[in-house]
Image (cartoon, rainbow, N blue to C red; front, top):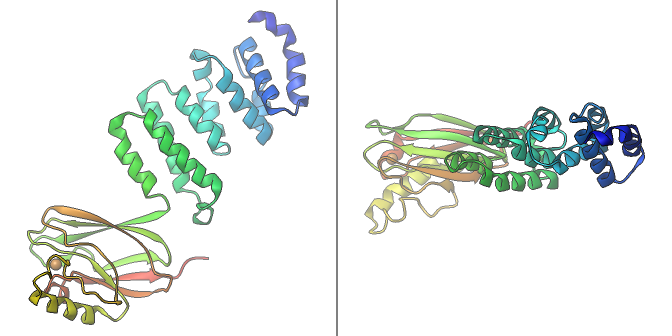
Length: 282
Ligand SMILES: [Cu+2]
């Protein structure tokens, strides 16, 4: 490798001039191998997007080994600006399962912190796909939690529980921004079944009474005691003792006070609360 050393100035000049990404990347790989270090090319990697891309591509061309793994901190540093290239490389440079989990977790974290307005952009969607692909590289025991985080990207998770032997929800009030994707995780540790029915503003009593009337129907239970009514916006099925249900919905665009109630006949009179839909922040 030391035979390459005299060529380094020439190759470095070539990297600076050549507009072909691949030639620049290959040049960087050669220089890194010759120097057993990235000291000459790291400044180029910090200069601009093209430099970052060439550097990351150059690293990926290096034969696997200790040398390559040494650049993990630099790849981490570039990950925010070049996630599509950096994260797969970071996974390859990770030598332990923990490092792999850490790399994928930080990718998912950065996706979670992407402003909502940019979450429909093709680059974002592509990164979500990339993250799903990288799941195969982490230990199986870590996958379910990471997959849930990925599935919930861009969504707000709120939790609601039935209170044991109290005929009540643990919260009287829930707040979500208008138009937001929401996951309502409803847990029922009580001994009897309950559900959550979110209704139009001012319609709690109307829906509650219609639900009570379903007690006389032979199929009321199968229908979860949820009235067939335009007042009902979103609902879980009846959730049995010790069970939980994830209700996914898009919050109404119209801000307001949306009652939520358990529509099991009789329950709604005490078992209810209000979902406040807040005006979206500009
Ligand atoms: Cu109930």
